[in-house]
Length: 356
Image 1 (tube, rainbow, N blue to C red):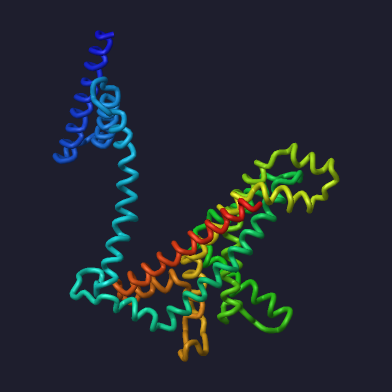
Image 2: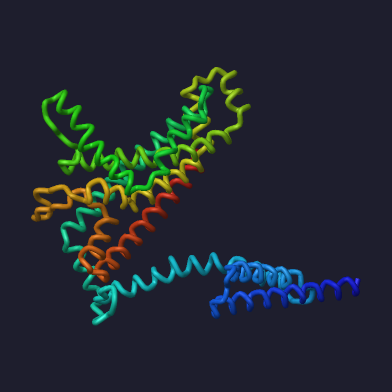
């Protein structure tokens, strides 16, 4: 046993040394720029893997497995910290300054937060966003659930239908917005001209443009939510459905008294995903209308961005108007609103699951 341990120790130590040597050679080739074969990256990766393998199997290092597990988890934690945690903390700090994206001249305290609530356009964007979220939580989940019921039936060609319904989700929001902008402005207008002798576009008025954004969002996102509902419906035991049928339950009774209660966790997940996605709606809003649309009077002000939602308002403030600190303050408020609403929704859904 001792001989085996000694052999394992020597082998592990050799792997560690070999890994270090490979990494050093790769770094030398990168620094000296003499890598004619382009293998420095491969040497770095192989050396890193060989080193960690040797360290993992080293028999006498105390808690070495825990160290290795942390090392493999560290890149993910580091990336999350760099892309989410640190920017969030810095953003909160910048929101109390006059940061212009390059430097900070003064600390202004709560001035940015007070200023945002004096902007009728910002208040309108919050209201429009909440209205958009409410409509889409209901409509997206309703359409997705109906499609899921269709795709779990005994119809032929269900694979084709599932792929067809999911396909719009694969198209980027910007591209999707421009495609539907063309449809609303050039295709739909031909039908209105033929039927009503009026070349009317849904994007020409604020109310109808808002409806257009909802239509596009449902068309894009319902297929994705549908797949989650399909997964939930497939977990309902077949013997329970068969027993209800033998007991004389109608399809409607089976749906509302068996299927829906048994997929309550799936409904919670889909509602949460729809809520957060609708709140963060940006790309379709930008490409389809760019927030345009007149509002004759809101808080005594004439607005020209009637379809501008919260994410687009923050983007315009920071990037278009070059007011980065002000945009950061709006983004912090956006984060607080989204976190609060998401937590409330999840808790209410979990309580509803228990009742079902």
